[in-house]
Image (cartoon, rainbow, N blue to C red; front, side):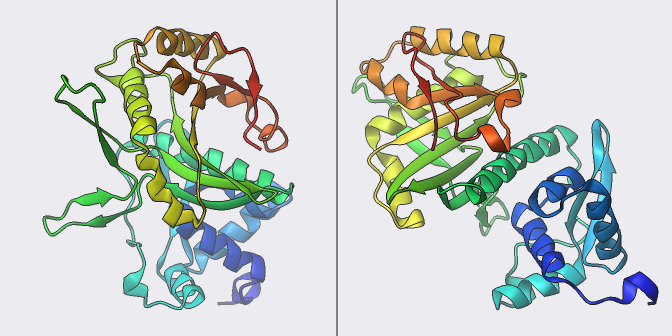
Length: 295
């Protein structure tokens, strides 16, 4: 190759490749936020990295951006940086998702991850780790057993029932040697809110039991910290929908109503790098009027 395409990788190029591997799929906008001062500069380098076989790009209906993922040359860079064999990577060449709804949700989770990562870089708060929902291991039958999927039992002895759920992500922040554990749920406005047997409210029922069973303490080992509790963060599409959620959660019968104050919600448009640690979160108990912040 000649000209621009013959230059060796820069330190930032390597960081981009590593992040595309870590996030699995990233849009050009997300890559720009993570690594570049302008979209023009981001596109210039992404074009080169794609032409040289480090990254691949694709488009899909209803998503107005090109989406990047790892190509073979990029996988070799990642393997070298992580000091592992390429076969040990969770990487599949030329594999693009067919379900655009899944992909939009996936990218929404990455939007939050990018924002919290950049906000931590600009503050004294440390991001101890971020575990997305897709992390898992293949079983002998070929299925993926998701690492952060959990199961709890109904706390009422007379109710013989279990609840299973996989969060969109689990992450931990630390400030002044005080760690905090968070579960993330991205609500894109398509699920029913008022039925405890499905959708949003079923998810809340899981977390209420999960808090009381203290199964979240399993993450003490992942983040090498001891957590006293956790917070559930729900990101939704509008203030009106958030208020509807709060009303339904408040009405939901549960022996310990105080647990609901560990469940917080906000609106997607309120989330920006500069506001991530502002008091933009509202308790899912509508009688709790305190504005909360995660940092």
